[in-house]
Length: 289
Image (cartoon, rainbow, N blue to C red; front, side, top):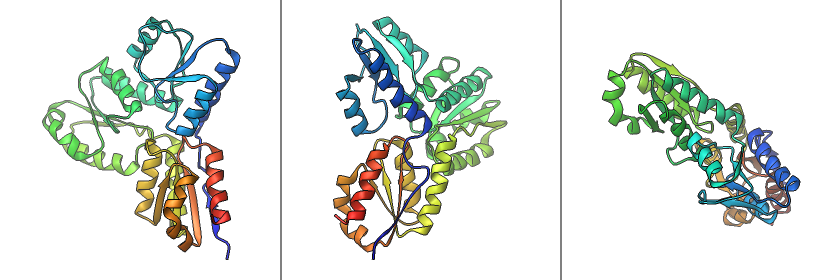
């Protein structure tokens, strides 16, 4: 009996990622004689980074002392200080910060300027969060990053004594993480302002994936292990049904038994997963390889 495979409608590139990848390729095509570099990985996907390298688009780990050509600020964003460093090194900066991420940065700055004790709900090591924090810190030193109540506990006295508390969220965070932190802050804050800055694409992707998980024996989440929105998807779905997280079709071999047993398989993918990778996964399952 052939397997029933359902692909999520909101699987693969979101608007911000699609815009970043297409613009960088266009920049190189229009400037073949110029160096085109990206500060950090443009998106969290090894296959895409490899494709960009083949087109002559370099990934920079750090800003060199002297550079030339175009340097792209990726969709995660950067602080004004970093953009200034790019200019000072000799690059022409092109800012491809995702519009949704820009909104979080702007809201964080607004709250910091207005004297709020700012709580950024997100992973402190994530590039998007690093940029949000750096932008807010230009206006206030009362900025803290957390993904759990435990991480906020050391700042409880400071938050309690501060007149007002503001909250922004990493665009790819889980709504449950935000809810837990808001519940805690409500109990210790004099005044609380919450900006739910989880992007609509992430919210819809997570909501649809939950329904997919309820209707299938197995859900396969496709995307980089470094991608926050992809790992969050896998975490959410594991509580509902049998779930595996793979980067591409070659990893399916590690889960042959699970795939063989499953009759109904749902497939979803992170915001930085290209369509061709998703298609390869579906084809391999259909062939029963």
